[in-house]
Image 1 (cartoon, rainbow, N blue to C red):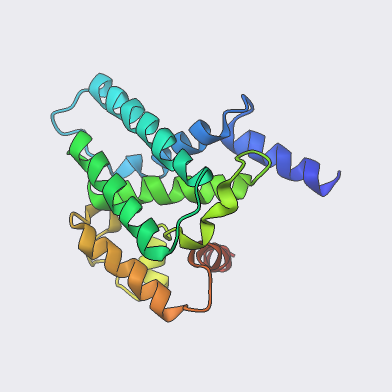
Image 2: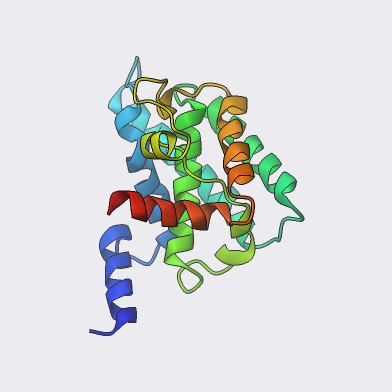
Length: 188
């Protein structure tokens, strides 16, 4: 079997075969964090409605990254923060830890799918933030298991410090690419 066919098969198995790679990756990224989402007073119907509302917002806003080139890291960081706050205002139940996971995993998935499935995804990838999760907190940032979980990060500034620390520690690397390499090594 040719390598390209193997890759395309994996993409279809992981993200679906309806051709809507952007939306499917957004929903896949939601599944990456939703186990940390407490139902609270929300019904499952309300949760589904909120999920779809935010997924629509993410598809619209993140698609802007496919059309325009950001001038620098600060411009992307500002875009990321504004989008995170917008999501938080629409779904108050989400922490910034959960929001960053949804945004950052969506962009990571879009980058994995690549230009043939999501044209323009490589325009700004060097600015993408790394997804913060338990494995990254323990292995990269040397935090103990019992420290506050990533899903409980309620302050964007706390989240953003992880991005700054990662960039400082690995200044010669493209963060999302290097995080992917590290993640694969950790999982082996």
